Image (cartoon, rainbow, N blue to C red; front, side):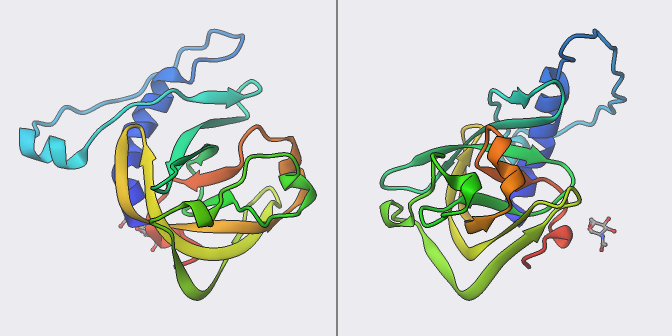
Length: 181
Ligand SMILES: *[C@@H]1O[C@H](CO)[C@@H](O)[C@H](O)[C@H]1NC(C)=O
């Protein structure tokens, strides 16, 4: 999950700017420290921006991540600041929560590489659980490409995911909180 964290900061800034309250105009104050940064380091960090949507008022934030090459596949993925794994619904998911939802097809992805024999498993504080296979592919997020990104192709997920407008989660914490290291 390491490569992902390079972008987490940029996205966190973007979220905090765009996460305007739904009805009540609250004022949020974010302390920022300025720090000089060379042009080279800036380009290595490859900061991008992307539109972010919210689920209901302030329930969750999600945006589009492109998975794979050959036939790039776009999915709405939730940005989660409290976990450290990335997953998307896989084509073979037949859980009720996956029904009639967009699903990732590894057969269309020329960058897809299974991590042999490694199951993917996550459990979140709200009780949501998902299982599947661990793999790597390239993803594009906020216009920035991550060439080798670990992720889970989920084949089973708990029912509570049915209501969500997104088909996966991107954990934005440090990689040492990943449940699939
Ligand atoms: C995870 O990594 C971060 C950054 O290196 C560190 O601050 C934190 O203490 C680590 N947490 C655990 C549980 O090891």
